Length: 336
Image (cartoon, rainbow, N blue to C red):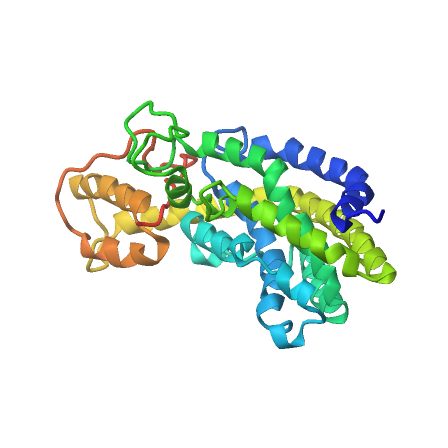
């Protein structure tokens, strides 16, 4: 009896999967606030941004190069499961967590990622059946180790992100009028959620059933190609995670320095471009911090100009600090 292609992928990639998991678990704690390396979600967001080009590349091929009329077989066409796609959710998360100029990976310090993106385009255009390898690895991972990572992220992001829940309410409380998915979306964690009443379990079963239907239709060479590409993916992912661990902490530090300087410039200068002095500066500072806390990056400049010289008492949200040198940077959260 022929084995499922999914089972063969799991068997072939198991040692590489173990290495990659250990590497991720080694670096995950330092990327989550609060830790010895960060007091904001920027380190996590810059790291996860490296997965956006990967998902965007192979998912886009379902919509462009492999339109239904050009797919090599109806079985491969049926493998496409739009509700599993993650690129748009990840784009939304990055827009919530990072300024626009930081939402795209810097390929000059991420050559392994750049090489992998080019590799994906090349091999999928040559061998469309390799989409089986990409969808299996990048979607099924979110239902295994991804659930653990999501739990750690929810715990880490529960405190610093604005939430309608009362104080001391467990973020996993399903009795809240706001669903967990809605809270994840506000927190910049929608990448880890699926649009389904069963938290994506129905989508996983649907996808695996389609894989089971597809497996017998593969030629022996296609089967070998898919398994080999799956191993290649895991090796490249391990290299990319190491690359992220080596380069992103410095980039996160630069981002937070940029944010401190922007805030300082915002409250040091009034609406006419003149330097603000005395009590006016101290009155305006809480407003700037409050706006940084609640509004999306694209709206911040307009909003801060609009309230430029407003003299209204305001309170800095609990847990946040004045933007002195070395102080934690308020987390920007997109208005919903």
